[in-house]
Image (cartoon, rainbow, N blue to C red; front, side, top):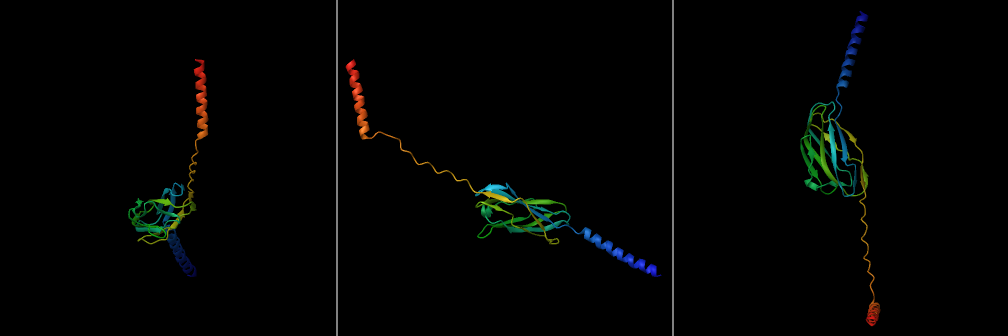
Amino acid sequence: MWLKERILRDGRGVAALVLLLAAGAAQADPPTIVTSYNPTEVVAGGVFTQTYTLANPTGPDSTGISISGPLSAGLGFADDNSTVVTTTCGGTAVVNAGPGQPSLMVTGMSLATGATCTVSFPVKTYYAMQAGAATPRLESSTGDRPSNFIPGPALTVRAAPVAPSPASPQSVPTLGEWGMIGLAGLLALLGARRLRRV
C-alpha cells in the first residue's frame, strides 16, 4: 500500500515535470530586428540605404506589428518628409524629419511563423563619423513579445575630400615700354643693313 501511494505520488510529479518541460520547449523565440547599411562606407553628405530585417523564427503568425525608432545621430532622411520607405512586411510608414532626432514608424505589418521581411529607406549623412545603429522598438498585437535587436556592421562616414583651390593666375611676361622701343630699333637696324646689301 505504501509503495503504491509512493509510485502514484512520484508519477504525478513526473507528469507535472514533463508538462512543465514541454511548455518550456514550446515557448516561442522572440522576433528579431537586424539593422544594416548599404553601402557600409560613405562620404559625408552622401546617401545610403538603411534596412531593418524582421524575422519571426518560431513564434506564432504575428499581425499588427509596428516598429519605431530614431536614426543614429548625424543621420537624416534623404528627402526629409517625402522619403520613400519600402516594406515587404506591408503596413504604413510615417517619417518624422522635423527638428531634433529624425525617426521612423511603420505600423500594421504582418509576419508569419518562420518568415522574414524588410523595411528600407534612404538616409543621408551630415559629417564624418562611425555610427552604430540606434535601437528600434518592435510591438505586435499578438503577444507583444520583446524583440531581440541585432546591430549589423557599423556605418563608416568618411570626410569629403577637399578640392584643391584653383591656382592663382600667373602673369604672362611681356616687354615693357623701353623693351618695345629697343626691339623696334633693332628691327629697324637689321632692315637698314639688308637694304644696303641690295
